[in-house]
Length: 221
Image (tube, rainbow, N blue to C red; front, side, top):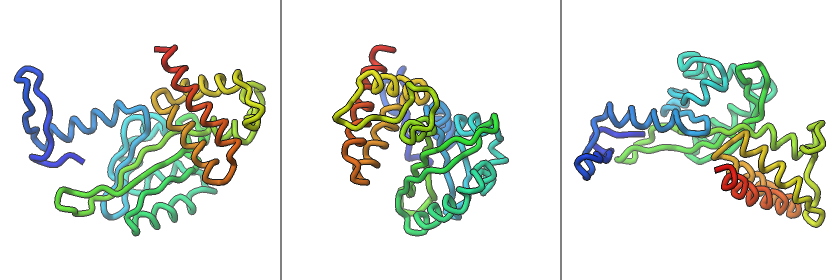
């Protein structure tokens, strides 16, 4: 988080860095986080959430006041709340980073699978300030992996030796449409999870999707 007297912004007119006030630094931080292509949250040292960025609030259709504290859990699927809070508390108490998936209710009432990655944050003197995390919608990825999407073009991926380049490109385009700048991170994370689980051929497929995401973004730009 920004700290008074500890942040610098560049003044293009003067051509040199100037210290920002605490208020300016906080405003800059929040503006940057609100323009990020992912949902971002922050909590204090008491585990309670203090802030959510605009993409989160747009996704849930709720206000910052409604989400603060433990209010955000009202949007978590009832079957996922216990696991979600338990994992968060365990990592929080251990001051370790975490990655977990749970279903979060979107503004239209649909539950979407979310990949939430968080970690501890500390002040300049080493004081523990709480946690900050980012979330991306991985519902499409889960459906592709599980073969649960009716449309044939979103069918579950074939083993690596049967790679269908058309399917790879289709999934890459879908991820870019859904996640924009975060598409590569989504595909790469899926590849890592399968590799860690010993599913090398499926991991290789998702590595190919991650590579295709880059090509798709270049062509779209």
